[in-house]
Image (cartoon, rainbow, N blue to C red):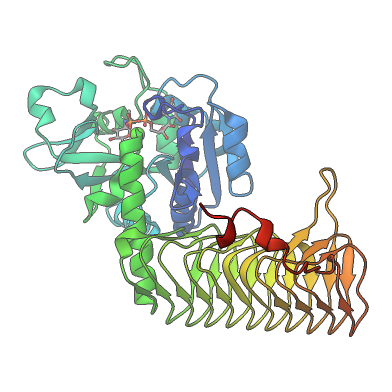
Length: 460
Ligand code: UD1
Ligand code: CA
């Protein structure tokens, strides 16, 4: 029988105090909604419907390829939200997973276990529950003296006695699809919040003598519902531990996994060493045996093998094998650094191709440039690529030697083996094998310094 999934993501998330819909807040680089999609994928739903409402267009953008949508114009509660999916799912045979978009830590494995449990027990409804040390805020699972689930009571509706219960509703369930949509018609808003509670379905089924049950998570951490930014930070921390552990088990060394911030989609090969206070963002990939030292911040970039990044920032760029970068270098979007190249301290590279074994050791800016192999940039080289309106391209051949403090005024090109004298301002192309000297010739005036106040002869 088919599985279906409904993801609830119409709420504003008032407690987040944010302009952004709650489910679009990110945990380890992905929106909470994307984490939920990833987990839901584990049960292979034949159809997934995401219920959207608050800022629906924004939410739809994130989920467009993964889901159909149902619009909930007014957020009248979780039960009402599920009713919106009736058009897409009502009448279909199978079981339907319902999960909230704000529970990013529930794993695909747990969803599979929940579904298996539901099938094995031939339930009409099965709740995913967890034991909380502090259950405040969650719906409580109420059981009778035979330990059967009889209902879920929301925090705001719970009696003093019910508030003592530590078993909580994670907001994730599996239902028989047809029974789900039939029973939704019996919901009312007779409760503390005046909403249609999805959770009331449990007592409705019980009263019909239909079989309901609960599958309890081993680890409460999975069930965390993110309602405010404190919980968001907690989710981030749990996710971080999971991600870093996965990499460690794959052969990556972390000096301090508590301060290594690795986004969900980052790929790291074996024998990479990641020091503390490192951020690897987005779709960054790091190749075998590379070293990323303390303070490095790498976004959507590909790092080759045995490459060393020392306290540097790299954005949207690719670095080949055996490259060395830093300390304090900044590689900006659109750059490619070829094998064995060295980008040293206080060097900025932007939209530039740097050839093999090329070295820019110190205090240099290389923007909008194509640079050949084995080029040496002297300290303080600046490519003047911008005239205040347009950017211009610089082309540098192989084996070029650029004297310290040269300014290359783009557009300009330097042929293979060319050399520029230190301190030159180069605004014309330099042919291959030539030296360009573009500075005033030095003049020494004999004895003139003796007349100047600094001279010992003129001191009082
Ligand atoms: C809900 C459960 C509670 C459970 C908790 C787990 C109900 C009544 N309560 O409470 O038992 O312990 O989740 O985290 O279901 N949403 C809509 N439309 C609406 C209302 C909500 O789409 O009209 C969505 C929200 O965007 C959110 C999810 O449903 O993704 C849960 O809503 P929320 O208001 O956070 O419910 P809780 O109060 O946390
Ligand atoms: Ca919630």
